Length: 498
Image (cartoon, rainbow, N blue to C red; front, side, top):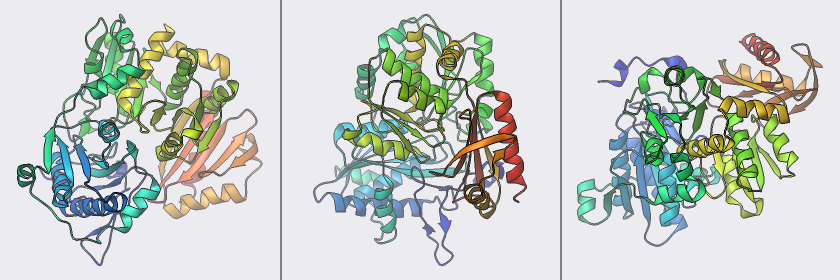
């Protein structure tokens, strides 16, 4: 099947891909929020994977003059295993000892293996939650997390500096430079050191696991097996088209999940994205538990039931309630620009005494685990929190509202020209009106985009992507009606900027 025959919807494509250089057949390769992503057969080609891998090797040699070691994993996208093998061949061609996973694995497992084994780095071939016609290349640094912007900037500077050196995988195995490996039990044992897995397995409940055809596969089901708990996995098979939806745990992609919960009378659904580093969930009614609420539930669980303390980090588009909870316990609170890489940097500094932190799109980090998003781990931690509370998920959310205030959230991605979106963001920053949608504005914040804040701590944030014609509008308000009114007004104004 040709990529062009797959019937992809161009409206849902995410152009965080490389920009082609008209003077060369090689793409100008840029790393985004977590790696380099591009459309398969356009810029994501075997030749460009070789070029990126060679740049990575050149970078690694600036960090370690000794024998280099790396691991390579891949997701379930079209030809991911072939691209992963090609990356392994370039690593071996540069005398790097490389282990290649025999089958698809979650991205966090690659990060975990890098840290556990003290490797120089890891490569994960994945485009995460992007549309099916994309693939990507993530670099996992020695500390077991995504490469920081400082690292990726150095890699980018080395792109094309050296002609790729490649050793065919079969020959690399003969020379002892390459091995094919299977996941072992170390990740399971690590999870069991942080989560009361036996208590979860012994619960009398039904849970739906939904990896959305991604490489989360049956990991949740496997980790929870062996007790009374019943786990049913849906969308577990490999499907490079992801069943016709984006492999992102957002409500518009979870209609099937919602229906299965209601039909089976399940306690909840645990959802992971295409490469299983993001967490999603639905409650016993088949209604979406948004990522703000997941972070609130985890934070309160860690503090009240596990007795943990420390700092809390939230990105600029995260909930007011997360801040209120942190303040109620006197915890240090970090607010960062949008993107988990900023949370990851806070996790890496021991002086920050990190406890938990997260981004609006489902990336959450927890103390004691790798400095990385891990959808599987966070799904299990969320289930532990729900079972420990002894209540249905919807009741837990209502309890949080009663204690810390009720807020409702929505995000809309509007396709507008980059220049128009930037102008709107700038206008709200430079010429802030006295009111918006009939509500008085009391403050403006500009950490990442322009956020208008109101008397009851409701807010609306306008943030223009710098790489694609998408203006993201985020809104959190004290009622569904107010939130809808505000975000509708935000969309109306944005559409008028075209």
